[in-house]
Length: 148
Image (tube, rainbow, N blue to C red; front, side, top):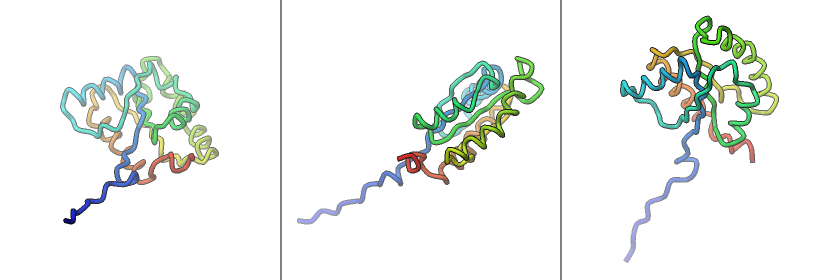
């Protein structure tokens, strides 16, 4: 008697990217909430971390997220000029180029991080940003492959 064995998925085939999304409390987090209440579908791979302002995010937070197991990081905040703390998002935007250089120096592809501006009423824009970062990271593969 012979039984046919179906091959199981390998770790590479079953891998799904894990994304940490830092969202501004006043705009992007509300946009993510609106996406949920509006039933706008986006992959469940992103875990949202609400921060008071994107101006509070430092490159160390992003590197720590990647080191702790995130395959990619999304930073989503108020549009420039609309920050509830006046200039927090402008401070992040000024740090962003330096952060990308720091990632390159550590050997991390800068496409693993994404910065987007999404207001509280832009649920679709938020969902599209999540899809974009997940697709980019899926192309790059697991970060654990790089950090053995």
